[in-house]
Image (cartoon, rainbow, N blue to C red; front, side, top):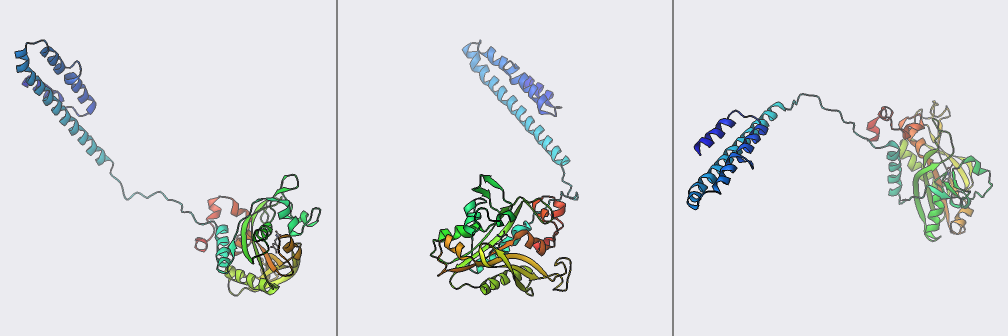
Length: 344
Ligand code: DAH
């Protein structure tokens, strides 16, 4: 027994890897190994001899197993320590730069308008982008064949009835119908709109509008003006002045074009206001009685105002962006040119 143990110890003395150690284990403890052979010889002996030799061989087996296990642990520990030594972390190495995202400035602007109007009791509502002709046009007082439809080159999806909304104004009709001519309405709807326009610095086949509708009793143009005034002052500064110019929309009467005094030159003339001192930011007006009627509101009782801002236009003015396409590409070099302090 001692000879065998000495042999094992001698054999493993210089082993430094677990693979070679495993070979030694097989040689002694494997199915056809030296110790297994001794055990099989044991089977051929007489009972007395078995009683005498059995425990000796079993002890031998246990001792060899223990020696090999210890050695295995020792090798593994040594390898681990070596690995740890080589894998030292160099904390002086410069780290990888991770780009940090910032909110999309268009969303940011919309949120700002939403928050303001919500504080004034408005609900933020949604409407479908795939819309029916009757909501996008007919119930807004724009019947089939009306020349005003030409101005909104529309994407039709199925025949003449299903289209991609060319404006967010259909949400006015939907909201009126939902309220069944009974309740006053204060809603805004920021959302995507689509037109068959060629993309350039100021046009896009897809853009965003912020629609507003208020229906109540005894509503006048001055209510509209006051509301628009609060919005533009919040976005562009307290010294901004609002002006209404007569305009024409089928769903409002009277209709106006909303101008703000140029925040850049304060009215002295610059390239942003094209030397006029004024910048157009929205269309608006008093809801046409026909539209109220089609929406289920009795125009002899109810009146209202509506407005529509171009969201990209507002963001371009606010952040000094001169190309609308910037909002819809993902080129970080361009996106990063915006002043992050403004938008974070
Ligand atoms: N829907 C109009 C457009 O896309 C904008 C607009 C004008 C909306 C007047 C309104 C409004 O609600 O009252 O050109």
